[in-house]
Image 1 (cartoon, rainbow, N blue to C red):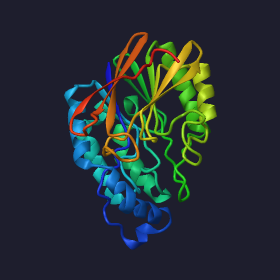
Image 2 (tube, rainbow, N blue to C red; image 1 turned 135 degrees about the vertical axis):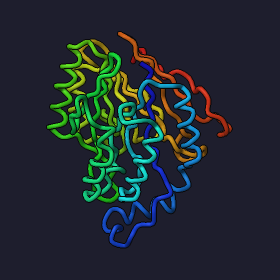
Image 3 (cartoon, one colour; image 1 turned 90 degrees about the vertical axis):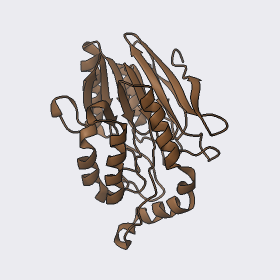
Image 4 (tube, rainbow, N blue to C red; image 1 turned 45 degrees about the vertical axis):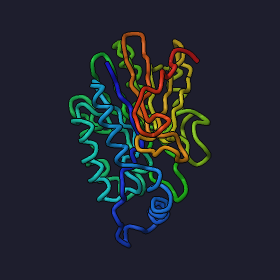
Length: 291
């Protein structure tokens, strides 16, 4: 299987909110968009990156969250239209991020709108979800939870962690290559204070016991390769840059990853903007072979 991974599209511009929509955290988030994020994310660049990704003809696409910015109803509807540009729901798997789950009021629409891209085999809804594709088990989690202003942390919770452990055990016995998808980096120290996964240590313990072949995340807007200890060796945990990041911004420029998943072997390659910011090129191997 050829699996493509992108994250943190942060599609814009953010629709002008109504006054009642700016209560609480959205007020600071909207100000942040106007004065910072709007300059960091380029929708034309995002379109070029998606065109390049689709030209690679991946068998499946993983999108690990932060399609939107402050969880407005109009944003979420627009996010659905953008997700359709990646592919039909059976070809694309989605895991929500903290900006998608920005405030409690956004959660019902978020769940309903993106359900086609986060529903498991035989129409089973809820997280974690499982999709079997060409010898690969795609396991989607949600780490996006509403938080206080200036907090961007995530959490899986005990029910989702128990479900993950059961799916890893089950699909491991089936001999499938297990790929776990979520937004926040799922290891201790994976993000700054108030930005990490609260139960990262529990995630590490699950992988140590049950194993996995690959873990994908976003959130940090940067290419990172980390390794967790599994029962039969190391498990690569790979973060990707924002898919819409302008060159010269605070974070690395826009990129996505391609993974070739074969029995007993996973290799990865990055593609993204070159140093000139004009072309999308091969950025080199991800180095998944060893810790």
